Image (cartoon, helix red, strand yellow):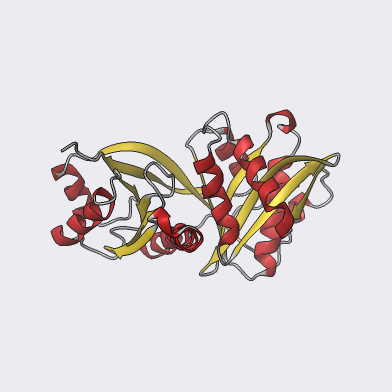
Length: 281
């Protein structure tokens, strides 16, 4: 049976909703880190309609998201954004939607920013009546369950190892992934194949949006249907929780993007990370 895919029209209002759903997740992680380890310097500020998050120099969560989606970004607000990161010894990284106000891109041009990363923002409507009809009866060989508290560390190790070919499995990365299990609205999942841990993923819920993130598969279990089952289970949970839209991210042209497209997601837009390095004094 062919999966029915409904194309979502993404305007500025929906783009803001999507970006802030992710931004609030990162902000919650920073709050959790500040609570767990006060000496970390973790911090969050609302700037120019978005959220600036700091969880350590070089941390993948130390960035701003959602900036410029409320309208014009003043010179004063942009300076405040830069100071948030520079004052903490970090480069400025801003995940930028193409729906952001033109003034933001003008600031980038005047201040020597460069594009350093592109990300496909993918969405799928959560249809309460659908129930994954296309996927019923399809056995992937993988079983996915919600992670109980005692297995949180196992989830962290599994997901980090699944990313090992792209990111070194450092203590810092393990700490960042562990934060996701500490934030309100987040649920962790482990996938097993023949009883062996094979991969994992997570989901957070904000403003009717189910964010599917942190999904990876251990090398030896790839092409065994692990990611498909992780998507199916999380979509079922999103329906039960009354979410309207599922949101996720992938590198353009990647295997992950292809898998998501096969499972009913569509690219809403491609966003760009703009970076300005900390200047040596």
